[in-house]
Image (cartoon, rainbow, N blue to C red; front, side):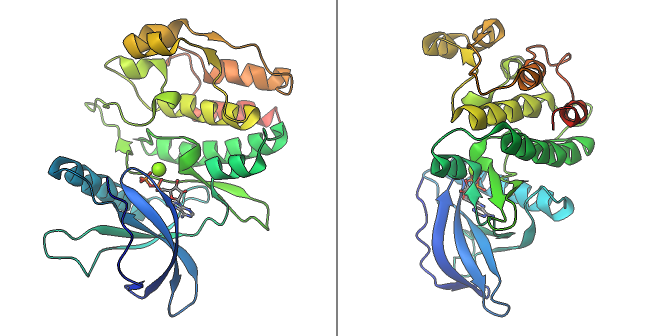
Length: 282
Ligand SMILES: Nc1ncnc2c1ncn2[C@@H]1O[C@H](COP(=O)(O)OP(=O)(O)O)[C@@H](O)[C@H]1O
Ligand SMILES: [Mg+2]
């Protein structure tokens, strides 16, 4: 993959200010609207090494554009507009998405800057916001499939820091005959991902991993052998035991984790049930 060092200063009336971060299929730049001076973000499609990967990058970005166009929610990043790079040749026009600017950056960056675990109260507040965003998705039968620290943005560093779900490149609509394929990041995988069938409950598990990472400064909740995880991940995750609970995690929060990390997806609560339970915590 080649991260674009965009060769333009201005694109469709947006002035490029600086690079913010790069993912697999897109790179984010801070930009300014020339007319309104509003600060926003340009997500620019990465140049991939092979034609096949180029196709995937294009598909992912188109999926994200379509999803964001019709899904507005206080805890989902807002798409301002989307267009194709006007400077590129006819057949190679990269997708561009203009997003609202999350001034705190990703939750991964926020945690790194903090340098230590977050207090339960703050972590649970972000977790609730992530759940509210997910609840909107799940009610409309979408599964995010890539919930992780890097894909949660933090906005309002001076006005109370709230969470926005972002990166909808892997989002998928579940219909009666959809079988989801594996996407996302192994650290956040629920055990059933390694079976043929899984659904929105994988987002519940991944949100649990995010919460655990916030409370432990990026630890993993289970004792697992890296080797076994590679050879037989399903067996390994189904049998995995919890690590001893760190003392800063309250008994109530441990009970929440037991629900989020229920190995059987049918017994794992839905995101709305998690939200109901959460009310008793804060
Ligand atoms: N709206 C935004 N505000 C601030 N930073 C952003 C924004 N969108 C993306 N970023 C940064 O860019 C990174 C990559 O963006 P992302 O949408 O996750 O792309 P990818 O699909 O390639 O993973 C994020 O992890 C984050 O650091
Ligand atoms: Mg990402």
